[in-house]
Image (tube, rainbow, N blue to C red; front, top):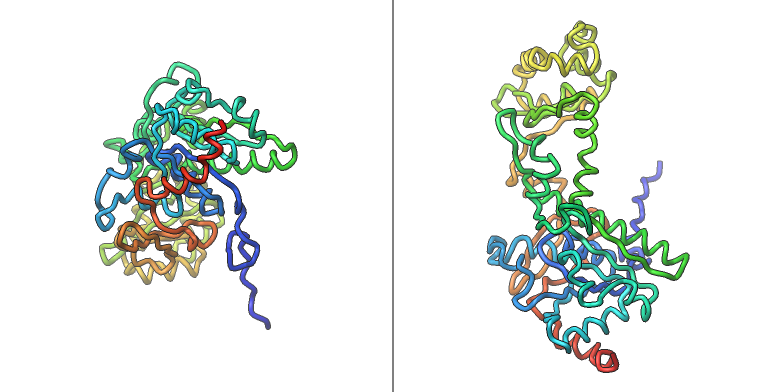
Length: 392
């Protein structure tokens, strides 16, 4: 029998196909997380990303010094980009940006709503000289509405959308421990840009995109929102568990270490009851006969499960659950992730050091070069676009 052939990755430069956005130019006036994450994904897909920074630089450069003396956020988000500092209040710098945009395929920014329009940098005006330009702005709450002028950072949008209200323990709400709103918005902007490029391939024309962080998280909150609207109450906060599925959460093993299991359908529940718990009677017990009953009787269900799980050490329990086809996981620490056998990594140069990060999920990520110093490419970019700026 022949060995299975590994699937070919379009984004793998080793395939000989190149990368999806090779040859495309992105001009990105970006700061913090959301737009830089979108820019990172564009760079990983092969685009040349020119990161335009204000005098003093992207403030994420100074968030911390936790990654070999560098900002952990900045190192994560900016490998493979070029940095130029522009002061848009200076006529020559504004003319340079205009010249860059005349050649760009994508213009990305996360400035305050209206900041660029007041300077005349509208998609309509830019496409008079560059018809294929795709513009994408990232805002907090959109271009209009009562919150349009509100400042929006990740935690604030988590709170406004109700995400914090469904996260945490029964006693207190909590922030999701990573910048989930920024990340989700950057991914959404990336996918919207790709859609716009596909449309441009048919029409030859670019378009304007506007992605609001609030809209992105509100969409992700649709299940809690539906529960609220149709049941008259929000899903309960249940810590490391699931508000509407059971058994689905954390259970104690014999060695004092916890294990997570996730049962998503009745077939899996029967398998857990018969093959792991050795209690086929539980499968038909009225308290546990379907998911709604199990959620209503979660405490009694946990007692039954832990009475059996407590006889096994965690690794033996994982083997038993896996054999029975029950999804399970360890409750790992970040230190465990750093040593995880499934973790793929990429390396970037940041200043004088090489720093390892988790790999991007698409492509190899090996082509993402160094993290740029502030204005590292300024002189070269100014020379490249100077003639066009002078003509402008």
